Length: 148
Image (cartoon, rainbow, N blue to C red; front, side, top):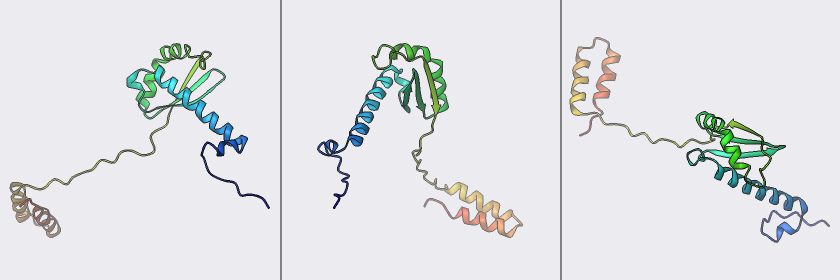
C-alpha cells in the first residue's frame, strides 16, 4: 500500500523529494536576486517594484504604477551599471519593466460629514419655495440630517 504524500514543509520534509528541494532552492535564489536588484535601485523607486525574471541577460522587473515604471526605464543604464557589479547579474544587458498594478488597494474610510444647523435652515427654506413635491420632500429629508 502506498504512503500518502505529505504537505509538511519542515526542513525534514525537504529531504524527501527532489522536486520540492529544487523548488525551494529556486525560490531562495529568486529571493536573493530580488534583494540584490532592489538594493541597486534608487531608494525612492524601491517601493512597489518586484524582480520578475533574469534570462539570457534580460532583466524583467514589475512596477505597480506607470510613473515608477517610466522612472525605472529613464534610469535603466544607471541601474544596469549597478547590477553588473553583482556576480549573479554581471551580464545584464537589457532591462524590461512591466506595469502590474497591485491586486488590492488600501480602502479609504469615508466619514459622512454632518450638516450644520445653518445649512439645514437654508435647505428647509429652499424646500418651502420649491413647487415640486418630490424635490421638496428630498430637501426636507436632507435638512433633517443635522448635528444636534
